[in-house]
Amino acid sequence: MTENKACFSKHVRLLKADEFSRVFKNTPLRSSDRYLTILAIARADSSEPRLGLAISKKNARRAVDRNRIKRLIRESFRLHQHDLPGIDLVIMAKPEAKNAENQQILHSLQQHWEKLAQKLTQKLTREASRDFHK
Image 1 (cartoon, rainbow, N blue to C red):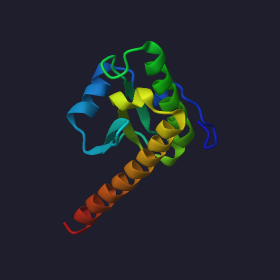
Image 2 (cartoon, rainbow, N blue to C red; image 1 turned 60 degrees about the vertical axis):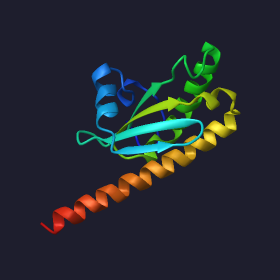
Image 3 (spheres, helix red, strand yellow; image 1 turned 30 degrees about the vertical axis):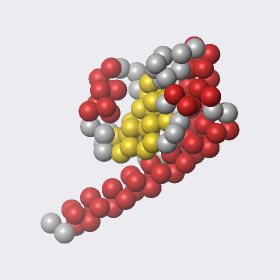
Image 4 (cartoon, rainbow, N blue to C red; image 1 turned 90 degrees about the vertical axis):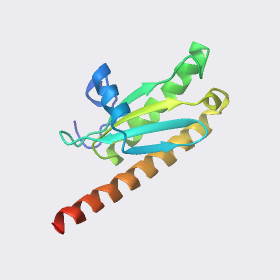
């Protein structure tokens, strides 16, 4: 994939149950606000981020609401994937997301991307420092 290409193909998605399970079981990074919760785990095998969506009927009853939320998340991820390190992400919507305006959700996602990139950078810096002092 070229550096400037912003696509959402299969290799940037979590597709299998075991990929989702790995993120749910081993979640070192978490970002949450009133609309969304994002779980993330660093990947050693790749430098590209991957996205998984878990938008439940419990939190967004109507399919049109779930699909709108997923569409917004995918679009935001597509545009920001080159700013993110190699991590697996699972995004879950909270009940308030179904009533939020599109711009509110997009702004929330923008803050999450920045927060996760910062947290991962801090984590990698701590690990590098720990390895250096061994």
